[in-house]
Image (cartoon, rainbow, N blue to C red; front, side, top):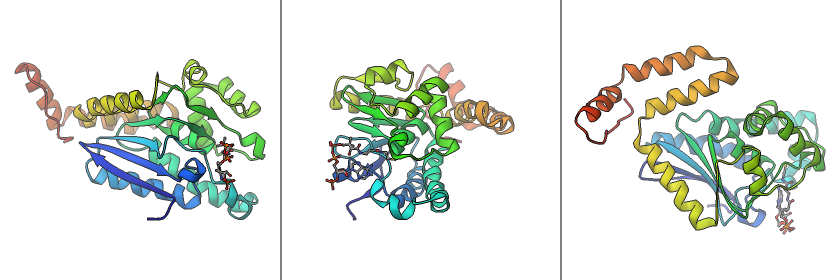
Length: 257
Ligand code: COA
């Protein structure tokens, strides 16, 4: 396997999407962004009921690999192609049919921040650091990526992140609403994320899908899909199982059907 890789690992119905390029704090080249969607699809095909996005070696992701920008993102024409790969990676996370959790430690910068913003839930260890330094490089962000950031922190905070390109602490990102929870260290973060992921993985997949589709519809306007996803829960075997389990005072066993 090459030094840089994006790969999925499955454990107890929890899919882990691992971003790895440790020598560059997991900054991803274009080929890395292009590996995200296939890796997520593979995890879903293997039965993942929740996907945890995490970086290798104590950092989340330092964004796009700037060293290849002179070639692959050198002007508007090449940037359009580059950004299609970037946008595809964010969409794979945002539109993933199961809940997604960002497990954030160390650097969470630029495109790494974008990946985290595309996740449903974000938890971080105390020492993590956040920034979107696009204005230091002089490049603009794609609409979908910006929409994720605005959704996560509101328009004013999104503009502050972009305009000043400052580094923010976990306390500041929690205050902005970006982080669900801050844990004291890497071990506590790992424990908490696994516990939360396991809880989600045990519950009804079609309800999760309906929740995700409905929250998403508030942005996309696709209320028909939200209604269809909600309707599907009521016709599902899992709904019958949920009611039976309630009657029989036992834990439900959901199949996703
Ligand atoms: N793209 C390419 N290379 C990167 C990178 C990125 N996004 N982030 C880090 N690296 C590389 C550095 O160039 C350096 O390579 P070298 O050893 O060959 O010189 C190596 O990773 C270590 O980084 P370094 O800057 O020496 O470490 P540091 O601890 O002083 O700073 C960062 C770490 C992450 C704060 C700093 O590297 C940085 O600001 N990176 C850019 C982040 C960014 O702007 N991301 C958004 C891109 S759109």
